[in-house]
Image 1 (cartoon, one colour):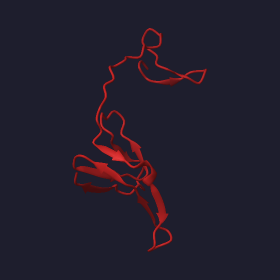
Image 2 (cartoon, one colour):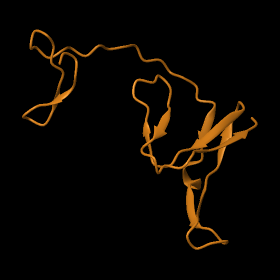
Image 3 (spheres, one colour):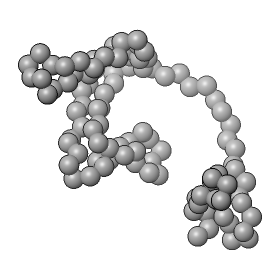
Image 4 (cartoon, one colour):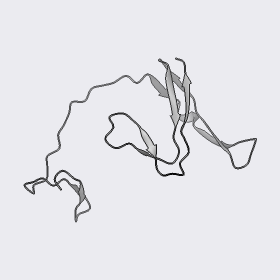
Amino acid sequence: LAGVPTIGAGGGRSFPTSTGVPATAQHETVEQVKNPLVWEKGSFRVHRSDSAKHLWEFCCEFTSEVPCQLAIHFRCREAVGSELLEYSPADAHARQPISRSYPA
């Protein structure tokens, strides 16, 4: 199939075309983008809940210059073809994501 990634004999990826010659990668310009959300990298913690031994709590600290929404997804896959960072459940057993809104 034209344009479908395949794994070659050397272990690398190749992208076949109708002519059989691997397609050349298209390069875009790179620009600096200001991210209004900053994670405090040393603040990520996962610890057992005080209320039950089988529950865990995820904690982290961040600052945001604009109002934001934080979504935590469980048992998920990144949505293919989306221009945004979106996730979908990996299977029927995946629970619904937890979402919280925070002011700036």
